[in-house]
Amino acid sequence: MIDRADFFAAVRKSPFSGRLSVKQVEGMEAILNAAPAGVPSAELAYVLATAFLETDRTMQPIKEYGGYHYFMRMYDKTGDRPHVAEDLGNTEIGDGALFAGRGYVQLTGRRNYEHAGDKLGVDLVGNPDYAMIPETAAAILWTGMIEGWFTGKKLSDYFTVGRSDFVNARRIINGTDRADLIASYARSFLAAIVTASGERPVLRKGASGSDVVFLQERLVSHGHQISTDGDFGPQTDSAVRNFQRLNNLTADGVVGTYTWRALL
Image (cartoon, rainbow, N blue to C red; front, side, top):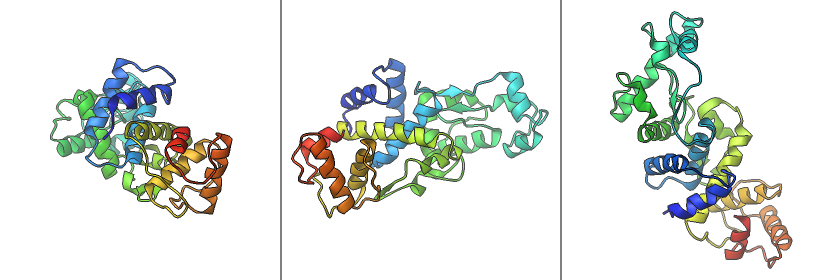
């Protein structure tokens, strides 16, 4: 369970750089509330990071930049790219503007609005602006990333037990565009989730799994060049001991309360 107050206090520092508005909190609340029960922390962090990037930090659903004439030119059957209109299922004149991008991620095209609406039980074809309602936008964000609506890639392709690929997970939405940047945001969100979820388990050489992956990612964020493979082997043990020395902690290779606090 995430203590929401602790979570917001943590993300205010990073990635929000010390400022957090009511609207940003409300947007994150919608995404947190829409998260499936038991979703792994790394996946939750990556979905939040995706919204952070795609909404330009507002954490509110947004409409694609551009006006009526731009959308018609780009997406309508009468525009400059009729093949794109066909791919998007924009079969009627005016669909280019009517079904322009909306939401936490840019749901675009009649076919995609129809598919999302059918999945969620919402009439998005008759009411495209429903995709701008935070609760609906959050449901589209989660379901689309879980099922692979946007590019065919889905969360389970990059997040498994012992593996959290924050860089290549960008392929779920948009190839590798700004992949490293969004990975850095995801690590900040993950640190906040961990902070708000209580103490981490004590880890030492020989441990494995998702907790070790998170430990390794935190060590990487502190400048240690190690693999994030979920195996607490000699490489990770050495990095932990070096980190502990640098932070005036007992350099015993055991990641307990004080080491976790320093890492987060």
